[in-house]
Image (cartoon, rainbow, N blue to C red; front, top):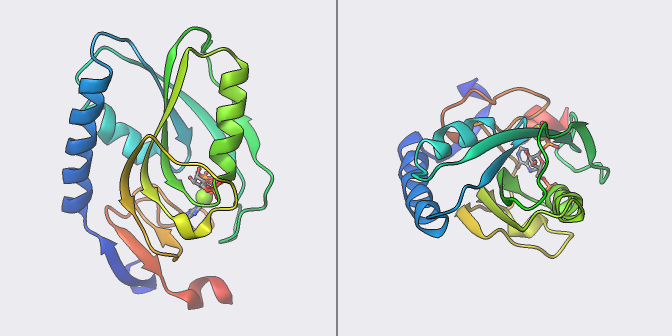
Length: 179
Ligand SMILES: O=P(O)(O)OC[C@H]1O[C@H](OP(=O)(O)OP(=O)(O)O)[C@H](O)[C@@H]1O
Ligand code: HPA
Ligand SMILES: [Mg+2]
């Protein structure tokens, strides 16, 4: 897999350090509350697992699966719910855990859905933010790394379902997706 990577953009150590910082901030901000932490599958599964271990307040977790990229480096523009939540968000403090905000389409769709279900608050934590990809104007409440305009893989993020198991973030060689 390393042969398909042009450059390691963010190391395993840098990611883990950032998650400690995000966890400390979230522990402060959610003190005295019982948030429902929602993992946006599939991409956020690795970040979710590492992050919740660093949040020191009682919390509950649930999972939602959405997809819009398929085997492409461009969003199809159509966000599909593949798996919905098991529990109600009504009256809950919801924290959405995303791996990356790129065009912003996935998140704007999710925010609309969850607000429509009467959550009492909805905040977003994303590990990566790619502002150059944005087609919808929105920002996360908590951001790990702002990244350049390149297609990244690893730490949960895929290209055509591959590379999610890399422990670091790499920039994929363009030859991999252009042929
Ligand atoms: O801001 P956007 O342009 O919407 O891109 C971000 C979303 O795209 C990816 O998911 P994808 O649809 O590839 O599904 P996956 O998580 O199963 O890989 C990623 O995990 C985010 O959820
Ligand atoms: O850069 C990316 N990499 C992997 N999946 C993604 N989904 C949106 N942007 C990306
Ligand atoms: Mg994907």
